[in-house]
Length: 242
Image 1 (tube, rainbow, N blue to C red):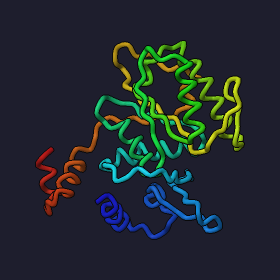
Image 2: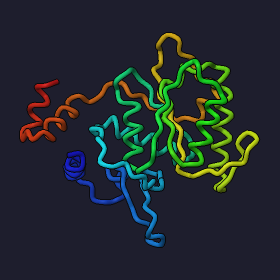
Image 3: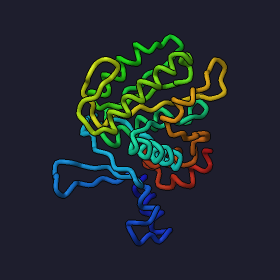
Image 4: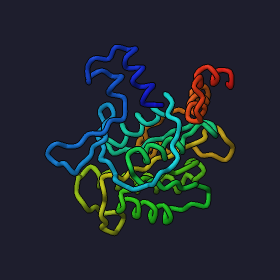
């Protein structure tokens, strides 16, 4: 249904060239002509490698314009070896959108729920494992971690970023030399304005591209849920629902 809506939108906007932004902003898959085994995923200026991780027939998210904006931020951030920081109130789909993009490009995404008990040893172990397997970390409620721990985490992420930018297979992480895979990505989600949340230090803020996720598109979500259940007039009914 998402694909059908895209085609309808492209027709309505009279998109005639592949350089048009309405086409560029879609998540697109290409086979590299020289390396036929390599599948690349492109969105606007970002090019990522397809992960090839087998997930099985998992449930997927309803893709709304809000999800698309979140995805554009994440792929754009990964392209320049940064992470993304979706923030907003509970239930707007910050974590789910991140997980769903990982499913779309077949990469394992580990969701880790942060609390004030987290210390830098734990984060070191988590990052070193994920960097070696090329999986994503989605650190939920990241601003619950104590400020003193956050500043060490910033140093750890900076070392990983340098390792990714170098293009080498190995990099020095604290005292150890470990392998690193280019697919690695670290994203954080936050609920700003809640009690007991800390403000992120500036050296950590610069490692994440922010995106605000405030109000989900309930009309579109209802339409797709009704449509997938077989209602032929889902568009009309969804407006009544919300």
